[in-house]
Image 1: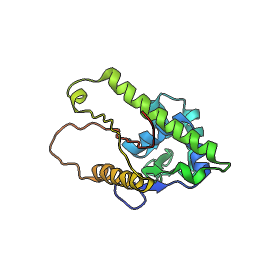
Image 2: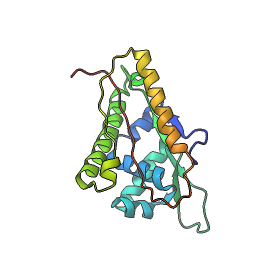
Image 3: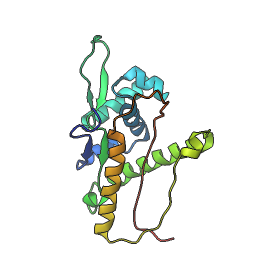
Length: 189
């Protein structure tokens, strides 16, 4: 899916999709497809250092949950390419509270948080110039109502999506893929 096209961020309402997201390797597959585009099972297995059978199983689960789909066949019909249905996902824990799906939503959020933490930890362990100076980490305390927190989140979404959807200049500069994530929630110091 082209960045900025309609549907590139999907609001998840289906507990089956969240159940599929509760596995860390499925997040790795989603991340790889988001960064590199459509790929075959073999390409994903090689890139993620997972068995082809494992990738096939995870793609089946993600497909049944409506998160990935077969990409239009290229020249070689023997190669099955898979692509994301939407480049971004969002959900609210509140929509699953006090329901049978609450544990599923919590597991999906936990798997995503673990993926984000591991990605940040791996970067910090191997950071080199100039990326170690350019990388951003922020930590602030705010005071807000629930409505203001929702507005804050919407503004963060706008900023992140504007950067993802921007035209990349053809200036010859070397660009790396960047993981940008933010969380904002009530807490006490």
